Length: 347
Image 1: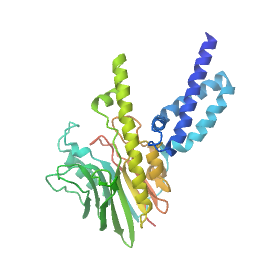
Image 2: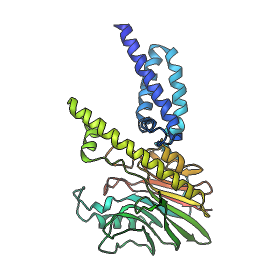
Image 3: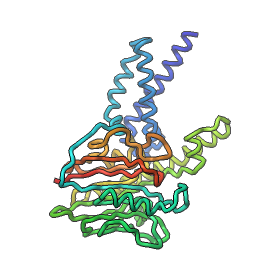
Image 4: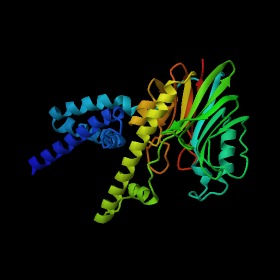
């Protein structure tokens, strides 16, 4: 019985080691070349926590099995910092306050049992004294929104009843365009504005990568999976099918957005909802040669999706010539995402 227990623990530990190894390489592999590896990146936090628990066990039980665990945990430290930050920096007077927020159509379909969410979001943003505001899943067919901004870029649309994106600012936007994806103008994937701030011009990208297409049953299953065999099977296969499609879609979008960013004549800041974790191809590509506001100046756990604990899928990334302070993951629940903001110094 003792040997059976020993070999069972060794087997599970070995599986976790393989899992965390593939997690570490998954951000460098395009999902369109091999989509299953993206699942390993998705479960990176689970692998790390499990491996840490096993390491404690081996420390007391048999240290010869401990060292390989420690090696993989040490290699994982840079990725762990993408989920839990202890960064900090002092605020200065020459900073711009940038916010990114997936507002989920301002609660158009009453997902949240709260009235007048659009007005509550507007009041919240105005109180935060934001200089540049990037909105994903923008929806406003009937009226002007009373944001305290002078300039705006509302993403191209075929109809005012469609949902799309927006960039608001207190600084002039001298050029406003939509990034073409697969030869089409996508009204909810990526827009950008060239913004003049004093004597500087920067380009702000507002990004909303392909959703994971989870329905209510998927979310309920992830939160509390049923123990019935058929429901587990149906839930798992449904989620895998939807994730495969979204992994591949994001891979295509990221490659084209990245090429556009690389050709920018101005320094860039990327805001948005990537619908993917910090251990993903999307984050790795868009974050190349960029700093992450959360890592640089955030504190604590950066979870931004309210439906699944610890899931961070919203980001503010910027060129290395800039610096940031006061990164905040705002805790108010007026959408299925939390707003994020930070102050960026351009000089």
